[in-house]
Amino acid sequence: MSLAQWRGGDEVARAAFADELRRICHEVGFLTLVDHGIEPEFLDRYFAGLAEFFALPEDTKALIDKQQSRHFRGWERVGAELTGNRVDYREQLDLSTENEPYDANALPAYLRLDGPNQWLPDELLPGFHDLVNEYFARMGELADELMQILANGLKLPANTFATMFGEKPLSFAKLISYPPTPPGEAGVNSHHDAGFLTILAQNGVAGLQAESPDGQWIDVPPERGTFVVNLGEMLQSMTGNYYVATNHRVITEEARFSAAYFHGPDLRSSLAPLELVEEFAEAVASSPRHRDAGFMAKRTELLAGEAGIGSTPVPVFGEQMWNYYVRSYPDMVRAYYPELV
Image (tube, rainbow, N blue to C red; front, side, top):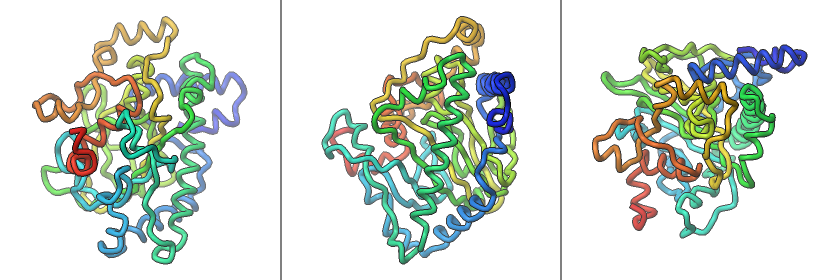
Protein backbone atom coordinates (compact mmCIF):
# COMPACT_ATOMS: atom_id res chain seq x y z
CA MET A 1 0.00 0.00 0.00
CA SER A 2 1.12 3.55 -0.70
CA LEU A 3 0.72 6.17 2.04
CA ALA A 4 0.73 8.82 -0.69
CA GLN A 5 -2.99 8.20 -1.19
CA TRP A 6 -3.62 9.04 2.45
CA ARG A 7 -1.22 11.94 2.83
CA GLY A 8 -1.88 13.66 -0.48
CA GLY A 9 -5.47 12.70 -1.17
CA ASP A 10 -8.73 14.53 -0.70
CA GLU A 11 -11.39 13.39 1.74
CA VAL A 12 -12.72 10.74 -0.64
CA ALA A 13 -9.26 9.31 -1.35
CA ARG A 14 -8.39 9.21 2.35
CA ALA A 15 -11.62 7.42 3.18
CA ALA A 16 -10.95 4.89 0.42
CA PHE A 17 -7.42 4.28 1.73
CA ALA A 18 -8.66 3.77 5.30
CA ASP A 19 -11.32 1.36 4.07
CA GLU A 20 -8.80 -0.64 2.06
CA LEU A 21 -6.41 -0.83 5.02
CA ARG A 22 -9.33 -1.99 7.19
CA ARG A 23 -10.20 -4.71 4.67
CA ILE A 24 -6.61 -5.98 4.45
CA CYS A 25 -6.16 -5.98 8.22
CA HIS A 26 -9.45 -7.83 8.66
CA GLU A 27 -8.81 -10.43 5.98
CA VAL A 28 -5.03 -10.92 6.20
CA GLY A 29 -3.38 -8.73 8.85
CA PHE A 30 -0.13 -8.40 6.87
CA LEU A 31 0.90 -5.83 4.24
CA THR A 32 3.83 -3.96 2.73
CA LEU A 33 3.97 -0.17 2.90
CA VAL A 34 5.62 2.27 0.47
CA ASP A 35 5.76 6.08 0.21
CA HIS A 36 6.07 6.19 4.00
CA GLY A 37 8.48 9.13 4.11
CA ILE A 38 11.49 7.32 5.62
CA GLU A 39 14.34 8.08 3.26
CA PRO A 40 16.28 5.18 1.71
CA GLU A 41 19.49 6.92 2.79
CA PHE A 42 18.42 6.73 6.42
CA LEU A 43 17.53 3.03 6.15
CA ASP A 44 20.88 2.31 4.48
CA ARG A 45 22.66 4.13 7.29
CA TYR A 46 20.59 2.31 9.87
CA PHE A 47 21.35 -1.15 8.48
CA ALA A 48 25.02 -0.22 8.22
CA GLY A 49 24.85 0.57 11.94
CA LEU A 50 23.27 -2.82 12.63
CA ALA A 51 26.00 -4.55 10.67
CA GLU A 52 28.64 -2.69 12.66
CA PHE A 53 27.07 -3.68 15.95
CA PHE A 54 26.69 -7.36 15.15
CA ALA A 55 30.25 -7.50 13.76
CA LEU A 56 31.67 -6.53 17.17
CA PRO A 57 33.45 -9.23 19.18
CA GLU A 58 31.15 -11.21 21.44
CA ASP A 59 32.94 -10.06 24.57
CA THR A 60 32.19 -6.46 23.57
CA LYS A 61 28.51 -7.13 22.91
CA ALA A 62 28.38 -9.07 26.17
CA LEU A 63 28.96 -5.79 28.03
CA ILE A 64 25.23 -5.26 27.50
CA ASP A 65 24.12 -8.89 27.77
CA LYS A 66 20.37 -9.14 28.37
CA GLN A 67 21.07 -11.46 31.31
CA GLN A 68 22.18 -8.32 33.22
CA SER A 69 18.82 -6.55 32.87
CA ARG A 70 15.82 -7.22 35.07
CA HIS A 71 13.85 -5.31 32.40
CA PHE A 72 14.82 -7.81 29.67
CA ARG A 73 16.81 -5.28 27.61
CA GLY A 74 20.10 -5.85 25.83
CA TRP A 75 22.07 -8.16 23.54
CA GLU A 76 21.56 -11.89 23.33
CA ARG A 77 23.38 -14.73 21.62
CA VAL A 78 21.90 -17.01 19.00
CA GLY A 79 19.47 -19.40 20.66
CA ALA A 80 18.73 -17.31 23.75
CA GLU A 81 15.02 -16.80 23.01
CA LEU A 82 12.26 -19.38 22.82
CA THR A 83 9.14 -19.07 20.66
CA GLY A 84 6.48 -21.70 21.20
CA ASN A 85 8.99 -23.42 23.52
CA ARG A 86 11.39 -23.91 20.59
CA VAL A 87 14.80 -22.27 20.17
CA ASP A 88 15.03 -19.30 17.76
CA TYR A 89 18.21 -19.17 15.68
CA ARG A 90 18.89 -15.44 15.74
CA GLU A 91 21.13 -12.95 17.52
CA GLN A 92 19.46 -9.73 18.62
CA LEU A 93 19.52 -6.50 20.56
CA ASP A 94 16.27 -5.71 22.40
CA LEU A 95 15.35 -2.14 23.33
CA SER A 96 12.24 -0.43 24.68
CA THR A 97 10.89 3.00 25.53
CA GLU A 98 12.99 4.19 28.47
CA ASN A 99 10.31 4.98 31.04
CA GLU A 100 11.19 5.62 34.66
CA PRO A 101 11.27 2.22 36.37
CA TYR A 102 8.85 1.15 39.04
CA ASP A 103 10.15 -0.44 42.24
CA ALA A 104 11.83 -3.81 41.73
CA ASN A 105 9.05 -5.43 43.78
CA ALA A 106 6.17 -3.53 42.17
CA LEU A 107 2.85 -5.27 41.70
CA PRO A 108 1.35 -6.24 39.38
CA ALA A 109 4.62 -7.84 38.27
CA TYR A 110 4.35 -6.54 34.73
CA LEU A 111 5.08 -2.99 35.97
CA ARG A 112 8.69 -4.15 36.43
CA LEU A 113 9.13 -4.16 32.64
CA ASP A 114 9.47 -0.36 32.55
CA GLY A 115 13.07 0.79 32.85
CA PRO A 116 16.31 1.68 31.04
CA ASN A 117 17.95 0.12 28.01
CA GLN A 118 21.55 -1.05 27.96
CA TRP A 119 23.89 0.82 25.61
CA LEU A 120 27.52 0.30 24.70
CA PRO A 121 29.83 3.22 25.50
CA ASP A 122 29.75 5.60 22.56
CA GLU A 123 33.50 5.28 21.98
CA LEU A 124 33.01 1.58 21.14
CA LEU A 125 30.39 2.30 18.49
CA PRO A 126 30.21 6.05 17.77
CA GLY A 127 26.77 7.36 16.84
CA PHE A 128 24.94 4.03 17.28
CA HIS A 129 22.88 5.15 20.28
CA ASP A 130 21.66 8.27 18.45
CA LEU A 131 20.97 6.32 15.25
CA VAL A 132 18.79 3.77 17.03
CA ASN A 133 16.95 6.46 18.97
CA GLU A 134 16.18 8.24 15.70
CA TYR A 135 14.88 5.02 14.18
CA PHE A 136 12.73 4.41 17.26
CA ALA A 137 11.24 7.92 17.12
CA ARG A 138 10.52 7.79 13.40
CA MET A 139 8.86 4.39 13.64
CA GLY A 140 6.72 5.71 16.49
CA GLU A 141 5.51 8.63 14.38
CA LEU A 142 4.66 6.33 11.49
CA ALA A 143 2.85 3.92 13.81
CA ASP A 144 0.80 6.77 15.30
CA GLU A 145 -0.33 7.71 11.80
CA LEU A 146 -1.29 4.13 10.99
CA MET A 147 -3.28 3.97 14.23
CA GLN A 148 -5.37 6.92 13.10
CA ILE A 149 -6.05 5.25 9.76
CA LEU A 150 -6.97 1.96 11.42
CA ALA A 151 -9.44 3.79 13.66
CA ASN A 152 -10.95 5.65 10.71
CA GLY A 153 -11.37 2.37 8.85
CA LEU A 154 -13.49 1.11 11.75
CA LYS A 155 -15.58 4.33 11.64
CA LEU A 156 -14.17 5.38 15.00
CA PRO A 157 -12.70 8.79 15.93
CA ALA A 158 -9.13 9.12 14.64
CA ASN A 159 -7.72 9.44 18.20
CA THR A 160 -9.45 6.31 19.52
CA PHE A 161 -6.33 4.19 19.89
CA ALA A 162 -4.04 7.07 20.79
CA THR A 163 -6.17 8.00 23.81
CA MET A 164 -6.02 4.40 25.02
CA PHE A 165 -2.21 4.42 25.03
CA GLY A 166 -2.15 6.09 28.43
CA GLU A 167 0.46 7.98 30.42
CA LYS A 168 3.61 5.88 29.81
CA PRO A 169 3.44 4.11 26.43
CA LEU A 170 5.92 1.25 26.11
CA SER A 171 7.04 0.32 22.61
CA PHE A 172 9.94 -2.02 21.95
CA ALA A 173 12.26 -2.99 19.13
CA LYS A 174 14.35 -5.96 18.07
CA LEU A 175 17.50 -5.41 16.02
CA ILE A 176 18.10 -8.84 14.57
CA SER A 177 20.92 -10.75 12.86
CA TYR A 178 19.86 -14.10 11.40
CA PRO A 179 22.51 -16.66 10.47
CA PRO A 180 21.44 -19.26 7.90
CA THR A 181 18.72 -21.35 9.52
CA PRO A 182 19.72 -24.92 10.44
CA PRO A 183 17.68 -27.65 8.71
CA GLY A 184 14.37 -28.30 10.43
CA GLU A 185 14.64 -25.19 12.60
CA ALA A 186 13.59 -21.53 12.32
CA GLY A 187 15.26 -18.17 12.73
CA VAL A 188 12.14 -17.35 14.69
CA ASN A 189 9.43 -19.95 15.05
CA SER A 190 5.82 -19.31 14.04
CA HIS A 191 4.09 -16.80 16.28
CA HIS A 192 1.84 -13.79 16.70
CA ASP A 193 3.32 -10.48 17.82
CA ALA A 194 2.30 -9.37 21.30
CA GLY A 195 1.93 -5.63 20.74
CA PHE A 196 -0.42 -3.30 18.91
CA LEU A 197 1.18 -3.21 15.48
CA THR A 198 4.60 -4.04 14.08
CA ILE A 199 6.67 -2.16 11.52
CA LEU A 200 9.47 -4.30 10.09
CA ALA A 201 12.40 -3.15 7.97
CA GLN A 202 14.22 -5.85 5.97
CA ASN A 203 17.61 -5.56 4.29
CA GLY A 204 16.80 -7.19 0.97
CA VAL A 205 17.30 -10.82 2.02
CA ALA A 206 14.38 -13.28 1.94
CA GLY A 207 13.27 -15.42 4.86
CA LEU A 208 10.13 -13.89 6.35
CA GLN A 209 6.98 -15.94 5.78
CA ALA A 210 3.36 -15.21 6.69
CA GLU A 211 0.61 -17.77 7.03
CA SER A 212 -2.33 -17.13 4.70
CA PRO A 213 -5.95 -17.57 5.84
CA ASP A 214 -6.01 -20.98 4.14
CA GLY A 215 -2.92 -22.18 6.04
CA GLN A 216 -0.25 -21.72 3.35
CA TRP A 217 3.14 -20.18 4.12
CA ILE A 218 3.72 -17.19 1.83
CA ASP A 219 7.15 -15.61 1.27
CA VAL A 220 7.10 -11.89 2.08
CA PRO A 221 9.16 -9.94 -0.49
CA PRO A 222 12.22 -8.33 1.14
CA GLU A 223 12.13 -5.22 -1.04
CA ARG A 224 14.46 -2.45 0.09
CA GLY A 225 12.74 0.75 1.11
CA THR A 226 9.45 -0.94 2.00
CA PHE A 227 8.11 -1.74 5.45
CA VAL A 228 6.17 -4.82 6.40
CA VAL A 229 3.26 -3.92 8.67
CA ASN A 230 1.46 -6.56 10.67
CA LEU A 231 -0.92 -6.51 13.59
CA GLY A 232 -0.33 -7.79 17.09
CA GLU A 233 -2.56 -9.56 19.57
CA MET A 234 -3.34 -6.36 21.45
CA LEU A 235 -5.18 -4.94 18.45
CA GLN A 236 -6.86 -8.29 17.84
CA SER A 237 -8.14 -8.23 21.42
CA MET A 238 -9.24 -4.58 21.36
CA THR A 239 -11.23 -5.06 18.15
CA GLY A 240 -12.89 -8.26 19.32
CA ASN A 241 -11.01 -10.27 16.67
CA TYR A 242 -12.10 -8.02 13.78
CA TYR A 243 -8.47 -7.10 13.10
CA VAL A 244 -6.35 -10.23 13.29
CA ALA A 245 -2.77 -11.00 14.29
CA THR A 246 -1.16 -13.07 11.56
CA ASN A 247 1.04 -16.09 12.20
CA HIS A 248 4.56 -15.63 10.78
CA ARG A 249 8.09 -17.03 10.98
CA VAL A 250 11.60 -16.68 9.53
CA ILE A 251 13.55 -19.40 7.72
CA THR A 252 16.51 -18.05 5.80
CA GLU A 253 19.15 -19.64 3.57
CA GLU A 254 21.61 -16.78 4.03
CA ALA A 255 22.55 -14.26 6.68
CA ARG A 256 20.06 -11.42 6.97
CA PHE A 257 19.37 -8.39 9.13
CA SER A 258 15.98 -7.02 10.08
CA ALA A 259 14.65 -4.44 12.49
CA ALA A 260 11.22 -4.85 14.08
CA TYR A 261 9.44 -2.02 15.89
CA PHE A 262 6.47 -2.99 18.09
CA HIS A 263 4.13 -0.11 18.94
CA GLY A 264 2.69 -0.42 22.42
CA PRO A 265 0.79 1.52 25.10
CA ASP A 266 1.10 1.99 28.84
CA LEU A 267 1.53 -1.35 30.58
CA ARG A 268 -1.71 -0.64 32.46
CA SER A 269 -3.79 -0.14 29.29
CA SER A 270 -6.95 -2.20 29.01
CA LEU A 271 -7.39 -4.64 26.14
CA ALA A 272 -11.16 -4.73 26.54
CA PRO A 273 -12.89 -4.91 23.15
CA LEU A 274 -14.18 -1.68 21.66
CA GLU A 275 -17.80 -1.37 20.64
CA LEU A 276 -17.80 -1.84 16.86
CA VAL A 277 -20.49 -0.78 14.44
CA GLU A 278 -22.94 -3.56 13.64
CA GLU A 279 -21.50 -4.57 10.27
CA PHE A 280 -18.04 -5.22 11.75
CA ALA A 281 -19.37 -7.08 14.79
CA GLU A 282 -21.45 -9.26 12.48
CA ALA A 283 -18.41 -9.93 10.29
CA VAL A 284 -16.65 -11.46 13.29
CA ALA A 285 -19.67 -13.45 14.42
CA SER A 286 -20.19 -14.95 10.97
CA SER A 287 -16.54 -15.94 10.40
CA PRO A 288 -15.19 -18.96 12.31
CA ARG A 289 -11.64 -17.84 11.50
CA HIS A 290 -12.20 -14.53 13.29
CA ARG A 291 -14.63 -15.64 15.97
CA ASP A 292 -12.35 -18.47 17.07
CA ALA A 293 -8.99 -16.74 16.53
CA GLY A 294 -6.62 -17.65 19.36
CA PHE A 295 -3.75 -16.01 21.17
CA MET A 296 -0.21 -17.17 21.91
CA ALA A 297 -0.18 -19.78 24.66
CA LYS A 298 1.05 -18.91 28.11
CA ARG A 299 4.13 -20.70 29.45
CA THR A 300 2.03 -22.97 31.66
CA GLU A 301 -0.13 -23.95 28.68
CA LEU A 302 2.91 -24.79 26.56
CA LEU A 303 4.33 -26.99 29.30
CA ALA A 304 0.97 -28.74 29.51
CA GLY A 305 1.24 -29.58 25.81
CA GLU A 306 -1.39 -27.15 24.55
CA ALA A 307 -1.20 -25.57 21.06
CA GLY A 308 1.09 -22.60 20.48
CA ILE A 309 -1.71 -20.29 19.30
CA GLY A 310 -4.94 -21.26 20.97
CA SER A 311 -5.07 -19.35 24.23
CA THR A 312 -7.55 -16.75 25.45
CA PRO A 313 -6.83 -12.99 25.63
CA VAL A 314 -5.67 -11.22 28.77
CA PRO A 315 -7.33 -8.01 30.03
CA VAL A 316 -4.30 -5.70 30.33
CA PHE A 317 -1.36 -4.97 28.01
CA GLY A 318 1.20 -5.48 30.77
CA GLU A 319 -0.05 -9.02 31.33
CA GLN A 320 0.32 -9.63 27.61
CA MET A 321 3.95 -8.52 27.72
CA TRP A 322 4.69 -10.36 30.96
CA ASN A 323 3.38 -13.57 29.40
CA TYR A 324 5.69 -12.98 26.44
CA TYR A 325 8.79 -12.69 28.63
CA VAL A 326 7.84 -15.66 30.83
CA ARG A 327 7.24 -17.72 27.68
CA SER A 328 10.38 -16.58 25.85
CA TYR A 329 12.94 -16.19 28.69
CA PRO A 330 11.89 -18.59 31.48
CA ASP A 331 15.42 -18.86 32.91
CA MET A 332 15.75 -15.09 33.23
CA VAL A 333 12.37 -14.78 34.91
CA ARG A 334 13.37 -17.46 37.42
CA ALA A 335 16.69 -15.70 38.05
CA TYR A 336 15.23 -12.24 38.71
CA TYR A 337 11.74 -13.07 39.97
CA PRO A 338 11.85 -16.54 41.56
CA GLU A 339 8.84 -15.73 43.72
CA LEU A 340 6.71 -15.29 40.59
CA VAL A 341 7.32 -18.65 38.90
